[in-house]
Length: 408
Image (cartoon, rainbow, N blue to C red; front, side, top):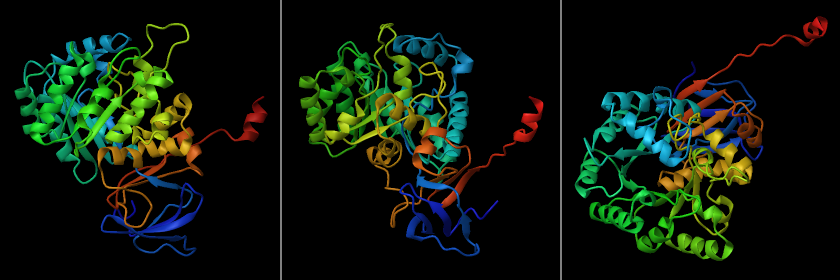
């Protein structure tokens, strides 16, 4: 393998069509210049024929649930069905089992180019409140330097504040929850916000994850408009069903409050609409309208192969493709939502092929961004903080055309 610490990335194609060399120093991009047409030198990494992009970030994952579908074999269904399936399985597992699946999932994310992950981790109402967090903290430590992992303590509905404190003490970074599942949505959200304020941490809430009811996003915006800490709302599928006279003022309020919104197309396409067999509504946050309103938006892959979503490849190209095809987001904006936009929502350092930015980069075998999003090329080089941390190369063979014609 080539030097894992390249100084110069040679002959890479950018999304705007330029072919450049990028100089890396101290984990950052020090210079970008037109490609030099000469022999490779020691410290060079040849990226000719490859598209060089900002490495994606995953702003909404569930590593404690990831890759559990084969063990559970859950019934297909909506959100309540998925929750019930997970709870039955969750009662049978331990820290090591969670850690094993989470490790495999992080490896998949990293191979595919993701160098930052924010994951929600269950804090149950009964039993050990720190089990899941401890498992993910162990995995986080093992991947330190290659993948930045941020943990959201996903509080069970109406959770005792002491259990949430225990999860934060064990290594969780943010407070999370799903108030729309509680008997009193507003009271549960207030409880979570009180905990975040008391601990001086940010918050990432599952908001309005139902098509026809819920009001978490509006309450969150009103309550936290003066906060400086991270405030994020995931899902927000109900907003796609609101008429203009309700949606527009809400979007203005959210933008003014500075709340980031994370759409999760693959899981919400799977979970929403089971009760509407004719003209089934699609459960995706209205990303285009949110962007036009000035809301910082991102998109995540959410669940991968668990009761909440039997599909998923831990691949940002999959998420971007679904934004394009199911939410009508332009290709370049779709990729921004899973890369620089995701990093901004997460509060991560800006990355990309620009001088001064962090050298978290992804090179793929494609001629354009549209081709990359459409085909999700397997050939990839993943760079984290200026260091090559993963590379995938494929070999193809097919019957020559002349032989095929002879066989007709």
